[in-house]
Amino acid sequence: MDAAPSATTRDGTGPTSLDLIRRRWRALRGVDARRKRSIGELLDIDRGVIVQTIKVAVSAGLSWALAQWWLDSPAPIWAPITAALIALLTVRASIRDAAEKVLAVTLGILVAIWLGSIIGLHAWSIALIVGIGFLAGKVLRLGPGAAAQIPINGLFVLALGSAGIEQRFLDTLIGAGVAVLVNFVIIPPNHVAAATRSVAELADGIVDSMTVLAGGIARPWPSRNALEWLLDARELGRLSATAESEVSKADQSLSLHPTRASWAASMIRLRQANETLQVVELQNRTITRTVRDLSVKIVEPDGRHPPMPMASAMLQATADAIEAFAHTVLRAEKGATLDVVGGPARRAVGNARDRIDAINADLGDMLAANLSRGVFLGALVVETGRILDELCAGLNALDVHD
Image (cartoon, rainbow, N blue to C red):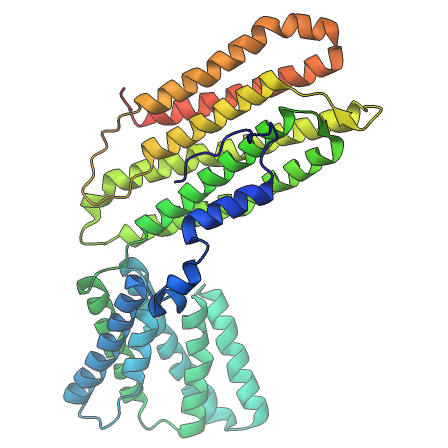
């Protein structure tokens, strides 16, 4: 993860969202990055794509060769087709998909044989078989790929007759079996690293959002900025949903994985980091909404609100604590232990709590001086404290030591 940007620039102004986007883009890519990128990078071809290509090719070739040898068929085309459709899935998903495709092929053949002998080949009979096949897939809750196999196989049997039905079924069986075997033997899919990157991006997004807000309220700020901060915070919902999906995908990819045990600690930390950051993202949204409410309910004559330096320092310290938490917990190494040293994260949380204590010490005077602003500041303190409580709970759940 990138280091959190500072709350203010040299001239005392805070960085805008565009500034942060440019800064991160330059850090990741460089000004002349495109010119220096390889052909593989330009085509988005990495190690994962190469592995997938090899697995699909090997699955298709082996299933063809096995079907030819076993079935003595000159062109067992359905075997490599089935293998290619299954080979890209995780081990667990490939087993499930293989079973579904075999079931779908069987149902499609049976439906076509049953109806074909009664109604023959007509436009309306084709529509009927496709409709029945579609409904059967829905009733059985098959995946989209498997569900499509029911009407497809029904149409083939209806159009070409019952000759070769056994061949079609055995081709599918061989293709499915070979794909599952290849998926298990040749670098089984593992999505832990991708999920870790996704959760890290969520943490970066929260840190950036809170840093922009902290920098913005450190100086006189126009009311319209509050809406921009709120909209930016709401955009993090997409990163949050993606992280949730990727963590679930990573967990599924390790089911039946031959090296699952060596990734157990990484998955525990990943799940805890995601659970904590999901709550923190919602709380960050609440904080920006509180600032937005302040900008709407307290109208300033010139449309500019006075700076809130203590709140700014509190939010920046909290952003630092979120980043320290993510750095501490997010690790995606195979064979890593659950042992986590959380000294920097705990110190960052403690620093943010010190900022809260400083505000609480003066909150009574602030309420007396300006009740409305004091109330909103108190709300920010409460909401920020909840983030820090969540970070501590996440560290304690992993039994993090200093």
